[in-house]
Amino acid sequence: MKTIDLSTASVRDLNQALHEQARQLTEREWAVTHPGGQHNIAAGLDEALKIDIHGPAGYYCAGMNKKAEVTIHGNVGVGVAENMMSGSVRVKGNASQSAGATAHGGLLVIEGDAGARCGISMKGIDIVVQGNAGHMSCFLGQAGRLVICGDAGENLGDSLYEVRIYVKGAVKSLGSDCIEKDMRPEHLQELAELLQRAGVAEDPEAFRRYGSARQLYNFHVDNAHAY
Amino acid sequence: MCGIVGLYLKNKTLEPQLGALFEPMLLSMTDRGPDSAGFAIYGDEVPEGSIKLTLQTRDADFDWKTLVAALEQKLGQPIDWFRNATAAVLKTKAPEAGIRAALAQTAPDIHIMSAGRSIEILKGIGLPTEVTERFTLGKMKGSHIIGHTRMATESAVTMAGSHPFSTGADLCLVHNGSLSNHALLRQDLRREGIVFETENDSEVAAGYLTWRLRQGDSLAEALNGALKDLDGFFTFAVGTRDGFAVIRDPIACKPAVLAETGDYVAMASEYRAFATLPGIENARVWEPEPATLYVWERH
Image (cartoon, rainbow over the protein chains, first blue to last red):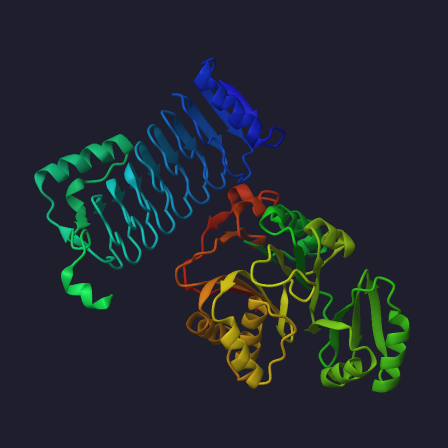
């Protein structure tokens, strides 16, 4: 295992060393110490590395991740795992807003709370939040699954496309075109699998499912007079 | 962009280190706001019936001694004072209105940055490090402090356009964000007698709070009024004589993070600003909810 201390090395040095692993893999396991909330830590990875960040990270941590398994032992700033393609990111603390934004794949687990706009415009990622998620979460969500074990803030799933949202706690309000849907056996099974992958001990039966009413997909002729 | 930071000490034994603890917090926000910087520090309180004013000029060689002598003569009251780079802090028993009138007559180019019993606002253009070194922030003592690093978006980079803005006795405001209805609101507030020095949107927010407080609102009422009447993005930190308050707009566009230990409460635009605080690894760290008022004050 290789350790990089960000109180002496720069984030640029760290990321360059990690990116070089995509060309020639020499070290699979990495530890990052003294992250100090700096931005862009472990962004743009393209190799199946295992990275442990010991402390709080700033914006866009593990952004654009492909294949790597990143664990942050602390809180993260805005946009953790934004645009992730594959692999997994685990936040041991809380995440700020826009966690997993626009991400296409992989698994994001937030053991604490997620801030506002968690999973905004998500395009295939799976997100499991063990605590609460903030307002406007899953706004414009297109594909993937969002699981919230705590409560969801205002306007959950506004202008939703095809993300399936599972919430155990209370939902403060649903956004436009987001509705509660039946929990069918295939959903219980899918949720059980997701919770297991995330290592979260929750009973799928305790969750409710929300999804798109699909009323905003196409232009509605009755609205023509508004133009 | 812009960066905002605040530090409120619960542990009085840390008060001699307030400036030293706060300086790296402000400097860590340099890339959010490299145009200008400023801070409002609370401490060195004058007794009841006295007032402390912080004055500032762009002229580094300004003759403060002559100005103070002229003011003493006009007011018929002694003034205790000291100079700090381009600023001077005056303490006197003379009434505030009298000092303001005398200053407007004697030295109309002097800016009154702050007035109160505890507050001193010091600010200027340039990189945050230039501003903190100019005023020797690292050596300052006090109970609490809020600061700002500015990346100008709405108006010119000038001393008057930099933060914090005074909003009344011992009150000040720092703002991260932008307001879209500031022109109209400025007109309305001018009609109410509020004076504006710049075209800056944050100055309008400060003027709005000044007006509401003058109307008899509590700080909480004034800030809740701001949620309704200000259109735009904002995270505000408000300094008061006894502490500080934080509030974000209803959709929480602009970042804010809070940290609390047994020794202090800190707020910042980003966690990075906390990295040098003692005991931060065991602090409770969280993000303030939208449209929710957070206040810490000594009682």
